[in-house]
Image (cartoon, rainbow, N blue to C red; front, side, top):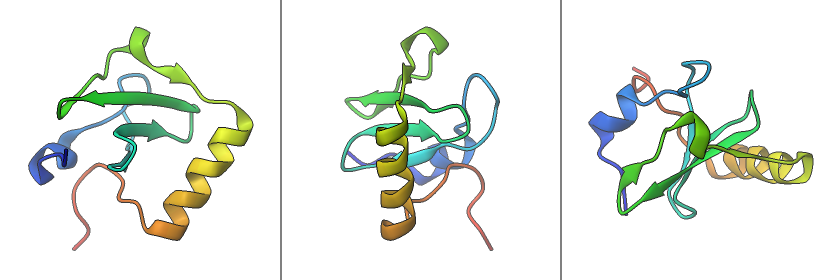
Length: 80
């Protein structure tokens, strides 16, 4: 389920307050700086610190490569 573009403009990591990568096909928001992922359930981001999942190095590399390859959008204000 897609997230509202206005919501994507304001979403931030609950830990470092930085942008997250939105993987719509996997329904996760990912913080590559902290190697943390957050699930989106029925279109609702679950951005609770205790619900974040630690991501190992192999998964981090997969997600960052996928983000670069597919042009995954980071949360925060849209460029332009």
